[in-house]
Image 1 (cartoon, rainbow, N blue to C red):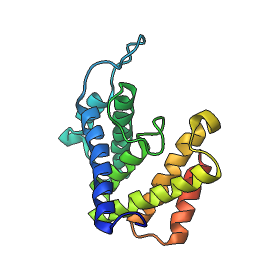
Image 2: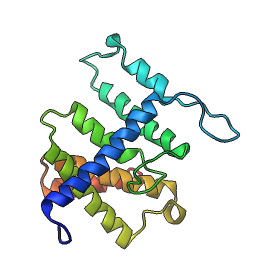
Image 3: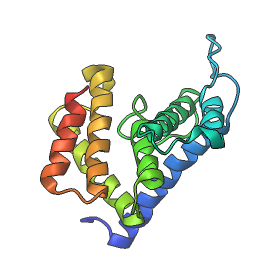
Length: 181
């Protein structure tokens, strides 16, 4: 906001979310194999089909939403693996985490809103900047666990902000997200 008017920031953030959501949707539809000699079969389309079956939803299953979160992250990761357009948030190696958690927020959290999505992205970006300036977001420097840890930290803090958490709760969520990686 120091460089752009609030409406420009909002527009650009919603473009980023749109690109992330498109990646999820493409990944859920694209069948076949990932490029390369290993001939790895895409799994996201079959998982999407399975989860979409009407008899698959059990309201008493508190973990049902996590199946969807896993699907969203897998779909993005498969799109990344085939060289498709992804939003590196914070890196290619961890590209599925933030889109999956935002999609979870929008699909499963009561009261989800556009403002919540904006708060999520701004908070996640601020957390990512702290890591980039004080440690690293690079898997080449801190390994895959560090790279994924940063993304989990960003997503946890972002989700907490989107849900209306206090600054202390955002900080604690971000810390727990990193700690567990």
